[in-house]
Image (tube, rainbow, N blue to C red; front, side, top):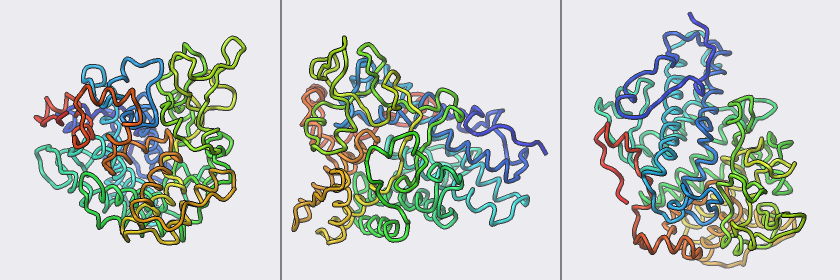
Length: 497
């Protein structure tokens, strides 16, 4: 048999239209021509992670782009392509490549995961015990990719075979499967299976947070349940499931908050799994220059600064250690300190992802957190309050842990005896502060149906909302348009705007 020498991330899988979904690219390795030794399977599994950020910073800066209708991040000096996103109005002509990139990458990840599952299931070259963690990673990644797709695009084709010849329900005609079916019959079962197969920590000993563990599967499952309880399904019984799954991690996961918020993004400590449950550890070894992250704002006023912090969000941000670290609100121009209010961008720069040698490039070799322990604490607090119609003592303890760390270890307890609505508002705000620029805010606003409300604080965005007729009850803006090739090739109905 031919020995595998390439990974999924560089094998050139393209899923750009219905015809391509049904065809296997010539360079794509198949179960028939791979020797499934543990060494080769490790290469295949590593390729799944590469696929996340491959394709011109896909699960990276373009993920932030997909959430620019939120209120925490705005477009910087390179604004022509981004202005319509700020206004919750996607310009198909100028934005097509961006959401097509995300569509492609998620389907590459799905196809790679499906092949790994099929190959491992069929091979006798590895023991069942040796297969377990790799199968768990593939099931996790397949679920994670579908989870992103349904949140961005709504109903989408869902696949569990590497040839993409039938959808996951066995239909030979490629159709858009319903969001509810994908959640209940694919995403949830895949994650439930993954948590039984995956090890207690990731398989890379010197960077255990860089590959998924059973706790990453549980964290993702908690977020899935929380999302199913909100828009669009609004099946509120899932708050209890989210509560219970987050509680499992708190009780038995062995995670904790790091002492200082800023330590989470330092390159020197990025592999530490004390708080990071699952994160992309950026490296040029994985994907050349595109292995770097691409979020931060460059200090040069003429730089290609795609993203800046929203100035109104900055003004509302509490005065804690997170604010000091997350933003650059002064620039050195002609040897003088200049406030962001007196610059062309009139917005603070994003600081949290930068390398610590100055911000001369928007790239860095830091980390992209996907799930960290603070997320679990706040998911528990939110879900418990909603499930039980009021916060318990344990929910207070979890949010207060996050608030205490934000104040540098000084107690900053939330007001006691809040009712369900008041506590929910407190958790909602805390999530915004804690996860600034971690591409969680848009998903939070959508599932809680607060996109319109949050953007009332931002005059620039509100102007766009008013201009394009976006109303409080308009949910069309919650989904991105389907790539035009999919609409034309597959006969899909375009998402309304």
